[in-house]
Image (cartoon, rainbow, N blue to C red; front, side, top):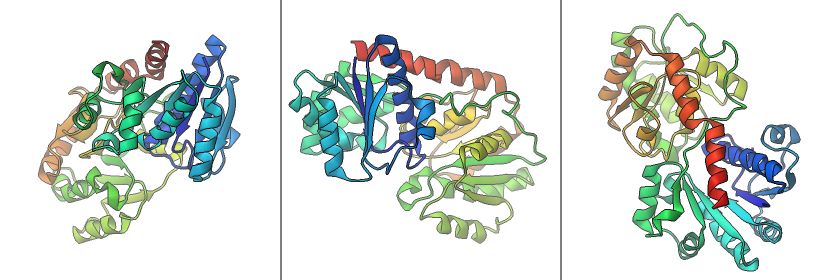
Length: 359
């Protein structure tokens, strides 16, 4: 089967959507190598795709790709052109789904699917999005919560909406003894975009919880990895609470440095209100680290009692209480890693995707 992947981007940024779409590309390429098919992809925002970046996610079955450097008309033309030699199209974002529908209209018999990540489908849809959604052969929802929210806004045949959780990237999993680095002080790690539009991530609530955490666990550090236009406000908030020594802003870090951050932290926290899934929780769990999340969105489908804790959103005192308890608890790192791999491993994801594409 010949497949085509449409993506907002794969390598320009390293947020959750590009990371999971790289795994879709990897899974599609591996399946194509088994059945003799070919894979192609088109990205909207990537200026170019470096072969070194691409190599871990593609193989001999990758026949062609186009990076459109934010040129929407070029993206549409390339999607329709490559769709003419495609059996199945996987669309990586609902905003691009009308393009998938257009490609199927130009090539009768072409089936297409949508990957529904989270908040982008928790809303009313435009006319063209509704039309395209109704024509989708499959909608891969990263969580049952995302599936439920999509159906609230557009009643569809529920059999076409499949819960396909995100997966661990085997290229980013730790190796050897790199899962833990001993530190003399507890470290709470969070990784997020620090943008005004993403204030629902709850990074300010973590900062506000730190005075109470420090009173119970002196010397604790909060490491904030990420960048964006809200960073200055968060830095000012830390200074207001006299936390400059306890709250560290790491900014953007490379994949190698991010591995080090996961390895050295004591626990991972992202008390977000609107996570469709929370891929970063899996990445922390791959290092055996317990996770703290808000009891909202898809996070409760990722974290259980053996791998972390859930708290009410927007409650710094509840965050502080949970962090203190987690820092004082003994966690089974091996069990956390095994749960992540058994339930969310790439092989599990790829096998489920292959079955859905075959139906």
